[in-house]
Amino acid sequence: MTEITTVKQRFGIIGTSPLLDRALDVAIRVAPTDLTVLVTGESGVGKEFFPQIIHAFSARKHNKYIAVNCAAIPEGTIDSELFGHEKGAFTGAFEARKGYFEEADGGTIFLDEVAELPLSTQARLLRVLQTGEYLRVGSSKVQKTNVRVVAATNVDLRQAIGAGRFREDLYYRLGTVPIAVPALRERPEDIPLLFRKFASDVALQYRMPAVTLDDGARQLLTTYYWRGNIRQLKNVAEQISAIEQTRVISAATLSAYLPEQPAGAPMTAGGVRMDDTMSAERELLYKVLFDMRADINDLKRMMGELLQGGMHRSEPAPDIKALLPSVAQSAAYDPAAAEAPVYAESEDVTDEAPRGMTKADMQREQIARALRRNNGRRRDAARELFMSERTLYRKIKELGIEENP
Image 1: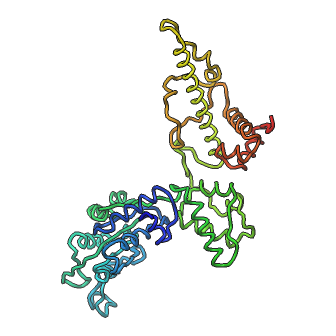
Image 2 (image 1 turned 180 degrees about the vertical axis):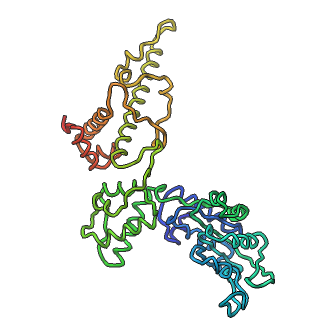
Image 3 (image 1 turned 90 degrees about the vertical axis):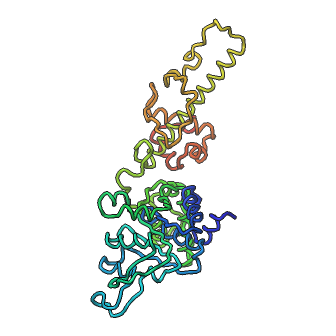
């Protein structure tokens, strides 16, 4: 069993995304050191797990671990909370009090939302990180502490530095080892797993059957933007589990629980908004391009066989367009295209239809071909075309495709 798998089981982390595994691996590797770590990521991605992992795998694991939400402490009392104060230091200071850095001596302190610290407190924090020294509020006596600091924020600290809200020297001191936690939309393969876990937890807690998703709902779940990340996904799973009477959730039912997508998201590499229909249309276009590339490779093999079969050097090469009229009519032949890499979804593939064909013609041809290859079985054809069966049925109706030609 790998260390990453052990960490996932111990802390209840669900997912197989390479981005998630990379972040966990960095946390495990840096844990035995005393280097300061800065965890970044959007709100709701689970940043709070990483300082716990770092503490648990460090030599400090038997000492205190203190988590501090910097955004939840008023500016007037934050210095006292972190560094302590002396009796009479301010109104209401009836006795001396230890701060978190004193309490956590020998252990780990997690500063969540560190970007919310006032500039004066940032200067105090910088001194602790550089020298291990600090002053209680109202005291001139230097105190020493041996604390491992892990900080986290969902704010772009470089922008905060430019705006004068965050100290640049503190940024570099905190970010000795950066860990970037991926957003939920960057790990779509984990979304159904997380939904099933949250739905199962609700079912177990309230003794009810767990909800499941049909194919259309699962596709909608994985393509949704998830601005609130895992926290939002859990909220949706709990709402559906508690409210819906049917235990098999459709895309129509699921969509009622999803707020409208934010403007411009999600985006493909070409900058086109991804909804269900657009995604299906682009997949069809990709497959047409794949088929054209295969035809060109066949043409190359034909030419090689002709040349090996006894063609003289003085004879002119065969007319490519005559050998493959369908390719010549649908796209101008480019010899470099035969060696071009297969297009991936992240590359910029044009949406323009080949000359002589409209986009609807290409979709119609591709769907009809998939149906023929699968003997009219919609489910198998939809799987081949990378779309849901519901979307395939809609496209068949829209394009007037005869299912049993």
